[in-house]
Amino acid sequence: MATQVDYYEILEISRTSSSEEIKKSYRRLAMQYHPDRNPGDATAEAKFKEINQAYDVLKDEQKRAAYDRFGHAAFEGGGGGGPGGFDFSGFGGGGLGDIFEQMFGDMMGRRGGQTRGGNDIQTQVEITLEEAFTGVKKDVRIITRVACESCNGTGSGDGDAGVQPCPSCHGAGKVRAQQGFFIVERPCPTCHGAGRIVKDPCKTCHGEGTVERERTIAVQIPAGVEDGTRIRLTGEGEAGGNGVPPGDLYVHVSVAEHGIFQRDGANVYCRVPLRMAQAALGTEIEVPVIDGGRTTVKIPSGTQTGAHFRLRGKGFSVLRSSARGDMYIQVTVETPQHLTKRQRELLEEFETEAGEDVKHSPEHTGFFRRVRDFFEGTE
Image (cartoon, rainbow, N blue to C red; front, side):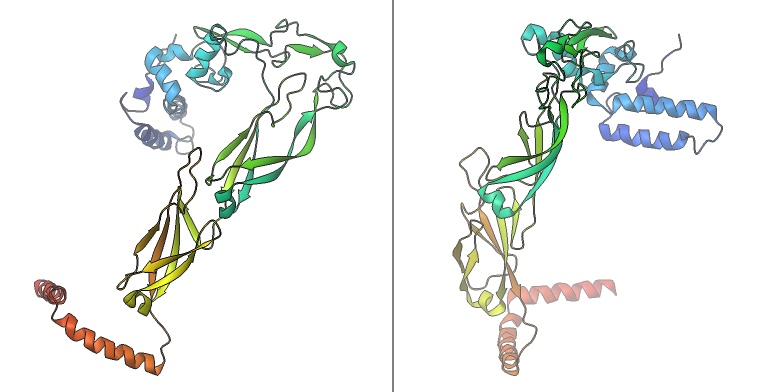
């Protein structure tokens, strides 16, 4: 039996290396030993395969944990899906948690008697920011598999009479298989977890128990939902066929950008322009609110660009909570671009008076002293 080299040694890293360090080392070595860079070099090709095999294990936290504990023995025997023959995909979700769930599921009452459901499906729906604030019901159209009406989803042309227990699993829907030193249960490959087979297939669905159809499903989107939220509708996925329960539908919510408001969590931001005179003298402005109303904000004299004014409780609802976010008014002071003759005269007069006052202020004096020292130091 050939000696198996430690995966950490292959990637030239330590056992305490981070995920980023593992990735960095893998990329360096893969580039160094890539067959395109070493044409005709059998040694480099073998090294390249070795590097990929090691990285496939160590990049995955669950596989890495198994390797750290059991070494190469964790990946020997059984199927051929993973490095050395260990197939993580055979454990439902592909991780160590699924291994133990399948090993002890019947004892804990979690998996006993369950059969594999129909496929989950995913779709996306876009809503406006206002709809995200209030909540909304949206109709989504999907093309999916539904139970065949001709056979009522049994897949049999003779109805229930044509359905018999699977001879391989004796109706259990599961068979035992060995993976390394683990003995686990998997869906029966003969009946695909259904626990039964069809003798006389339905002519409409050809024994599958399902047919492809377009469906329209109403999705209730709650108030306060954020961009990227995933909503799960249990049992609205593909029909399983042959008596198998349907999968789930996952709706990914996308919130469109708004022309006035920007959102950050439960808080809402609104950028408001002010004329120079308004910012200098102070004023009151009316601003829109995300709930469709309006409110008045008092702007004090001397307000500068970047100033924030907080409106408590005017933001979004927090999901599964009675709390509300806040709204923030962000001020931008605009400089006038097209002045009349009179406006220019007034501003010049203002600048003359303000310049005399500023000239003798501590801030003005200190600033120009620092400027003078800077240029003297560069000579």
